[in-house]
Length: 189
Length: 189
DNA sequence: CCCGTTACCTAGTGATCGCTAGGTAGTCTG
DNA sequence: CAGACTACCTAGCGATCACTAGGTAACGGG
Image (cartoon, rainbow over all chains, first blue to last red; front, top):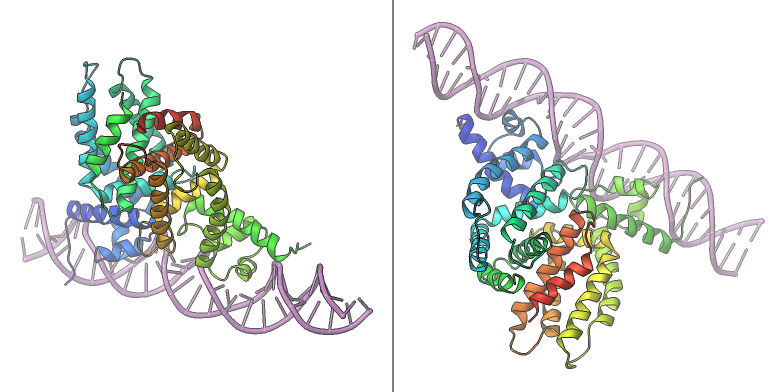
């Protein structure tokens, strides 16, 4: 009766379910027992794979990071290659389009980013580092003539995050990519 | 030794502390005991004033709503009075400036807005209604010639929310109002 | 100054939390 | 096909959860 999976498959299944659960209730708000139930197992069984609640959270972030790293790196241009405004807009559109295909991930990050404002949250350091890096990357990308790149990067990044959250709240009731393109078109000189 | 307050003062003190605590840990993440401790009382004492955890949350939202209602209404122009682009920008700047003076409130709303994406969250209905109203108001305000007001309203609102969150995350490390003005200047044609 | 009201407490309720110890039973290797 | 390995379980730990019942003592009105 009881299903037994190999290590890798089980860990993947748990992490996928964790993305949804943590995105819905937050790190403080979900329980290991509840998550284990969704995976048709006990909390003790789940903890056999991830030693603690905090370890589980970090494992989620770790895994998503590795996967996203490749995708984003493929989208961003390398080095100091000269880029046109049109190219920049195209890169941004590709990033948003990618996010539009993974709403649970957008929700997870929206939730954790707010929770992790608290200095004692287990993902606090992660988000400080991650978002600083994101700002640096965007600043490099947006290094257009006559612009202060980090100021612009901040505005573009936060407009993107804000719009994605709005999109979740309206239950994907508008075209995220098209609306973003309109925003970007105006925001980037 | 034990301090006894009158109903109104105590309720106000609790609600103020609740804004901070819920903003930090979220509705699911904070405990009544923890909040009561910050008010130098027991959880039973606190529950004497607010019957349940959910009631407390709704009381917080209720009170902030009444207070904000007056302030926002005073900022927004009434009726279909004709308005210039400059006037619109000025109104938006005033709203952001007001928020910059109440970071705990910005944080509370950022937290609850994400948590309340879940349909079973006690503040879900509240935020659906509230944000729909906000979008309508902004659309009315932004009803400028040659624009689709609700599309623009969505973009302006989400850029504002996103930037405020960023501002919290960078520990208020940049000038929120100035940065917002730069964004608005570009976003609004 | 007394008496009703009420702010707030102590002491508990059962439920659930994260987590551990130790066992059971599938699976893989030699 | 035996034995090592390990995925997963049952049982239970102490802590904490939201919340209740019933008491105590400070206040306000007469």
